[in-house]
Length: 114
Length: 236
Length: 124
Image (cartoon, rainbow over all chains, first blue to last red; front, top):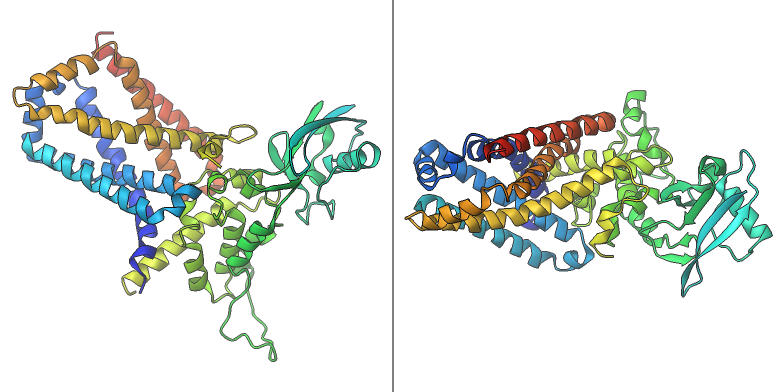
């Protein structure tokens, strides 16, 4: 049975790839809706009504999850690429995981409050 | 005449020194270095052995690219040739770098056939088809010159990183149909200093003098390692 | 050795350049993510005043150049990332040079198109 530590790296690698693929789709949609249609889409009332729609809310939640995962796992990876980072491996794993959770939970809170 | 600018190191300070070489067609950088050593400065230090591209001793940075000095033609490099030791290795003297760590990493991946029925007193013939050989043949050509390691960005910042050469060697054995030690090696290369630190800069494959394509080996090894670990996690 | 070791370009092939840009754009996008989530906290003001105030600054002709640079980062990182994912699965490694050329051209084309649309939307 593999320990949690030895499973984190292959899992993180596979997740980095999957979240990357999902983001190519979702970020394109997000960017299209907000920046390529008209500036009306960015007005406060429009944003609130868009987020209220269940499909958009779900999409934003998924986007938030994959982006936060990918970004902070990416940060973890490049920090561990350095000798200084590798010496503090445990701390960096914990810090980046917490940062991901913070970003995700804060984003969800924002998403469900507006 | 070709100007050779060589980065010297005497154990304390690093400095550049220039030499004018009467270059003839067919002269290699290694021959030029020997010329300098014999005619200008006998203190110039560099490693070389076979002078035919199979031992891997004379790898050095020539005009910013790591190459084998014995296989690089002087006249193909232009009027000025810059020669430096390989990056990412500690310089001992002039163009000679420390290689102990590099060889230790190679040894660490168990680069030999591992079999349960390994009985020295009763040797067994292990058969292999040409197709099975093709699976890993290209990765057997590594001459351990260190050029790949010198251009790897992960090796630049992480001293303990296994490196492309060691991992290509690991894959060479994992992909060998005669080998039974895959799981052992997967465990070794999936340490935090192993396959997970490669992010596909792919420069290693570009500079390998034997076209071993270590980057490809690392990807294939990583895929095999990841699925092996996850499979065992799920109890398959 | 410091992280400058990641950004050596002398004597390196285009693969190293692509690696360097992938890393730089990744860090830029990480910083942008944090800034973006902070920016969106302006939505908590239910009158919409804070949010609209920030939009007035950032969705403007003056800010367009930053938007265009950001889009370059995002488009390059995503499209180049897709190429990297292909190779990390062991796919098409033999065709890495043409693949890099094709994906870079696609990234630049998408970026130019997106920049043009954003430019037109801010009134040209």
